[in-house]
Image (cartoon, rainbow, N blue to C red; front, side):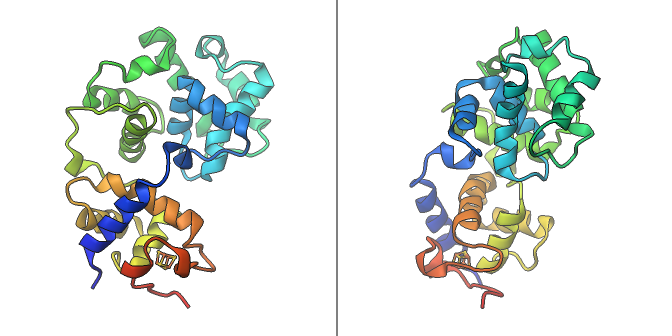
Length: 245
Ligand code: SF4
């Protein structure tokens, strides 16, 4: 039986060792810089984050900017869906939902320009979490998981604390890494989304989403699919290593 308290402590210890940059890995430093200097790059990448490798998602704004020479929502705004689809077609690596992604991009762009004066940071500036979430959920393709993940990312990247978040209801947004780690820890009985969400709620009942980043980081850096580097993993002492040879 997994020791949830030990796992939680180890995960939070690990979380304290890295900056938010770890959660937004990109394929080149320029892409990372764009994400951190341009709030529209940040929010559009968050909205596109659906089943695609993290490095690709956080690099898409940079690749788009390379094609058009800017990453300004006001300049993207007049573009037709066909034109945006054309830009997405020319990306070196594409998001998983190639048909849906241009529409998602166009909608978040329209919302930023029409409702937030072209400044993406106005989506969360001086607004409560529930209003931010409502805005995010109005974007085509953005569901509860992405909206919650984006709220968590906004808090982390922009150093904001939303006062109205019921953190007990902020679940993880499981991906292949978190699913695998929770299973190997012995916290999740199987590798599937529902079990992983439940496991995270057991480990961190006051704020399940708080362990999303550290779980992901462990999966990406130590708990690889084919080889688990348990000896140097921060969870070594509290992990049941289920299925690890
Ligand atoms: S690398 Fe090993 S110790 Fe770390 S989470 Fe995976 S199985 Fe557990």
